[in-house]
Every structure is written in C-alpha cells, then in structure tokens.
Image (cartoon, rainbow, N blue to C red; front, top):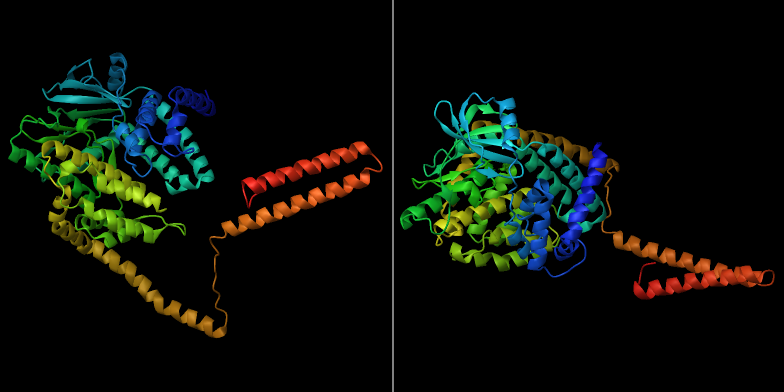
Length: 530
C-alpha cells in the first residue's frame, strides 16, 4: 500500500475517532476553531481520543501538557493523566526481535510476562548467563511504520494551519510538529537512548543520592536495550523516610535538575513519577531516557539567568531575557508584557512549594507571552514541564520545600559555573577571535559609509510594514466602486434593451437588483468589506 493511501486511511480513522469523542467540541474549547468555555467533560473526551489514536497522538498530548500557553488549565491537568499502556505484544514476537538483534545466548532467563507495556516498547525482566538481573526493553513490532504515517499527517496539518492562521504562526505549530517528530524518533532508537542514559549518568555522578541504571553493553541495538535492573517504588507522600532524609533528598533531586538545565544543557526531560523510583536504601533511581532535552549554549545561558532573575524577583531582567529568547513582531505588546510581569512575579516569593501549583511560575510566563503576541521557543516549554515534574516529586518528599528559595541559594554556584565555562581557554579564544574580526572590519566599513555619503551615493532602504489594514481598505473601496459601476451599467443597458427585448431587460434589472442588494447587505453586516 502506498504512503499516500496510508495517510488517507489514517486521516479517515482520525476523523472517525474525532467524531465519536466529540473532538470538535474540544477544539472550540481550546480556541483552535471558535471559542467556548473549557469544561472537564471536553478535556476528558480529548484525552480519550488521543489515547484511542495511539502512540503518536499520546506523545502529542504529553507534549501539549507542557504548553499552558496553548491550553486551558483543565486540559493541562487532564493531559498529565494520559495513559501510555497497551496490551503486550505476543512474547513470541518479542523473543524473535531479541534473537534477531542480540541473540538469546546471553540470557539464562527472559520473563514472558512484561514488567510494563507501552505503545513504543515493552520491558521484560531477565537473568543474564553471568547471574546479573537486568531488564530488556524491546521495541514493538511495526510501530515505526505507524509513527511515520502519523508524523507525516501531522506535519502537513501543521503547515496548512500556519499558512492560513495567524494564531497558528504565533504558537509555532510547525515547530511543535517538528519537536514531536524529534522526540518520537529519539524514543524509537534505543542506541540513542543508551547514549543518553550514559550521558545523564555522568552528569549525575556527583550525587550519591541519585542513581541511573547501567547500560549492559554490547547488548544495545536500535530495537533492543539491556539495562541493569533497579528495584524501587514510586515516590508518594507516604514514603516512610525520616523527615530529615526526605528533605535532603528533595533538595538534592530538584537541584540536580536545575543543574542539568543551567550548567550542562542536556537534561532528563521526563521525570514523572513512573520514571523516578525510591530504592530500598533511600535513594532515587531515574529511569527511561528516551526523552532528553538539549539546549544550545546561548539558550542555556539565557535560561540560567532567567531562573535566577525569577528567584531574585527582578521583573525587568526577566522581561529582557524572555524577549531575547523569543520571536516578536510589530503587533507584540512589549510594554503590556513588562507591566503584567511586574504585577505577577512577586507572588512566587515567600511561599512554600505546597501552596504553589507545579510549574506555576513558568506556566504563567508562557501564558503572559502568548497574550502579548510574544512567541517563546519550544525549548522553554520542555524546560518548564521538566522542572514542574521535578518539583512535583520534591513535593511528595518534602511539602515545605521552596524551589524559588532553592534557586536563590544556588545563584552564586550557577554564576560561578557560567563564568567558568566562559573563561575556559578554548571558549574564551573562540569568543575573542569572533569579536575581534568584527571589530577589525568596523573602520573600513565606517570609511566606506562616509565616502558614499560625501559622494551622494549612499542608499538607505526602507521596508514598509503594517500596511495590511490600508491595503484592506483600498481593496474594499475599489471592489465597492467596481460593483457600483457594474450595477449602474446593468441598469442603463437594461433600460435601453427594454425597447428591443423585454425578456433580456428584465434579466438585466433582476441581476442589477441582486448585486445591489448583496452590496447593501455586506455594507450593513461588515463595513469596510465586500
């Protein structure tokens, strides 16, 4: 079956699910088509529809749950409950994949009943021939082809929406589709996940309280990944740890995630409660590194300074840093953005974590930006979601922890680490060389500008902007004048034709009346348009 036919069939299936789960109602409630107050029923239906559509749409929902600037609170809350659980694939198919990629000889036993079965992969407990307890993560057969069809459909939809909707351009629908594409492809490739696991393990090596499962090499392929098995339970409020130990563990855990974002630029981007286990010896084990956030150096630096500015209640600096990260246009209301930021930022200081909704500060920043026509980079949303999940785990361990105060305490460490990065010989030499080249070219460019100014050959180009409204008015005026001339012509022609042919004259009068009435109706209904 051709790819085009697969896309058509999948589009029809999406349409059937959307109709059955009343997806159009949800689209109105989230502001995609029309407007309607958000309801819990609409959010639940939206979640069920995504779960029914499978892997790609579940991952889309998880990605959207990090975008409080796009969705109402009730939808964000519901999408955090997305369940990525499916019936397990037959063990004979899983065993065939393992045998084909790494062979069955390294194992003394592979449990037929999976420990977990998700839409992309399922995990089986196993015993290596050398006695080590491990888990084997195996990609579900056929999932890659299904994801490819879905991603193609979503990319085309996003491109169409951006072409025809200003709102879609502001929220960067195409960038959202590309981000989903990158995340899904990374989760499908277990070689990439193995590398990410080892990278995060190296970043967290200084934290004795945090552990990451070892990758059992060479048993790593694109479809199969063997990892050390770590026993533990989900972190809950009734964790049973002494209060002092729990508080220390919470602070360490949250600080580790802030450090990953602000210093390393590579971070575990999915620390939900199923991926963080409390081990019997009172440590936290981080699991599942299919979703990794990566920041370029400039964005990492800006986010580091932004978190510090939020912690220190410096609204003007927060505004400047956000504007430096974002896309703005002539329609962006920067003064309004700064005013609202000064009004809202102080509310996050001096409050315990228990009184702050997870990620409230960063979520509010995203909403404020959207209201004032400022487009944040998609990386900001993923950082916000990651820190929200991290402080949710911290809340379960120590409800009295204040993440804002913790950021303030770590300010000096973050700034010294950033200065150290900037002063590394290679980075410093690269920066000086880049800036020196621009400075050395400056005298020559200044001389050329003065020479052209003296000779009268200096040209200044001005690109007019914001003329859409004027163009609209001119087009509307021209259309109405043209229509009026057509009506007048029809009336005159019909009057002259009446002496020759009454039938044609009647048709002309009727046509002129219809056009005239239509013009009058448009003028009354929508002034300025035709």
